Length: 218
Length: 152
Image (cartoon, rainbow over all chains, first blue to last red; front, side, top):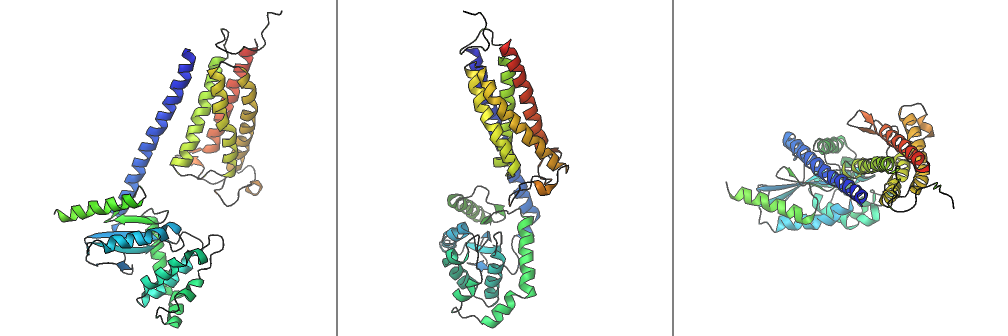
């Protein structure tokens, strides 16, 4: 009889130690990511980064975004809705995080549209058709050119820009910032510099609410 | 009717001298299993192919030996030994790959993480296959002791 209790007690002790280990480890890695965001705060927003909403908003959501990522696509209307419902208090800054195969080409096309002031139009066209061009084993990002043919771009210039050194440099900067901020999956959110650690729509909304309250009480 | 009992019967056998080494083997398997799950699921280190084969040998030991302990059943040693032996062999091979004794070209590693990668270390010092080999060695010794005690 007592031997059974020894077995059960040992199993329970190991399970408890495991749970405690998870708590300690999660806490420590959260601290590390927070520190990375504090040390590299200049890496959050760059002058070239597209901004949606009031540029002078008190709360800034920085989203590390991959045009091929399904969760980014699902979150796009949610985040946009949060900005629209905030009466100019929240803005969204997009950063490129091309983690999927073929995403770099897609990002370059969208950035070429940004040069002509049509980033958001191009992004919405690309996201709407994401299932067609962004299959993970056979991505065809070149298809985006056909999708954005009628949004009023100078296509010759856009194609030249997409392959040009300026956008290449910008993409390298975004990737370097992504690594400095320890973003390893998309979408990666920061709200006023605080990383969203537990992923989810409710968690993101709670973090934005918290920052809105902070900005209301000086 | 012979007085001899080659293997302790079911239940709380009075001459269950095998219980302590069996418990040690189970404890090692339990610690190795939770360690592997911690590295993989919590720390996010993707297991390489050879790591997966070692997991396949290690994880069932927790249940097989645990049930054996619960019913003081020495026959569980018989079912655990092949698993431990297979796991030990894969761990030894993995360590040779890690140390570069066996060429990496022979390793069945595809797109996932490499089995010879420096990432296969805990705290940047101890190679995970060495931990695995130590655990399997300890389990084999403890099981061998349990078997020796159960048959005498």
